[in-house]
Image (tube, rainbow, N blue to C red; front, side, top):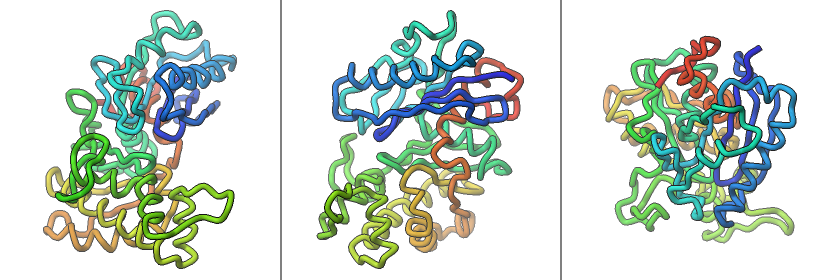
Length: 321
């Protein structure tokens, strides 16, 4: 059995895994992301995940290591500047990971955006498996996307193609941390959903964190403010998806990430709003479905892309950039 390494770094969690050539996670490790901490503290969390993976006997059999990170990323430079991790700006993540003393000699990690990794995984093994043209989205602490066009993963010059979270859908909206007004991420991320519900007067019981998951729970119980927060998020997502479909033509849209775990609370209003925005003949009726690989898609995709770049034949069925 061939073994591939993977890291998936987002605004909420830092995950790592050893993945076999069937896309199965042999081992998984995870730490919370200290998103508001210093760059060294953030890297320490990454190192802790690597340390746990490296303690497994199969670590030494690893043939490549993929890193999926929230973006923007610069795949050529090996740097990351996640919008929701302020201390990392042009942070040399690939060099830092490559310097880990347990990394096999000569192994250079491969960097990819987290949503692009999710697109690779869903095209290889998930909901977009039979699709030639797909938009795959991560809706979580942030909002990202990756594109499969003509059956191939399209990463773009710097690795940021499909970064749908920073399409402006509200011309007079609040400034996003990226600097632009009215971004999808500022309206539809888990953070935005919780903030919108709280601004409308919603609150959680004592001891319960005000997260998007808590808002979804309240929405399922009929709380009007929670329902409106998801409605607003769904409208922003529908506008951005329809715009993307008009630009590149799509067969399917796959949505994963923590917010997608809300199920019908998100997907019912999203599909309804798609009718309002996807009105052209070639965009109308576009399927919008949940990711099949759930929260492991970034890890599986990072391993798949790294193996493809390394020319590993065992993952020949996985999408190549």
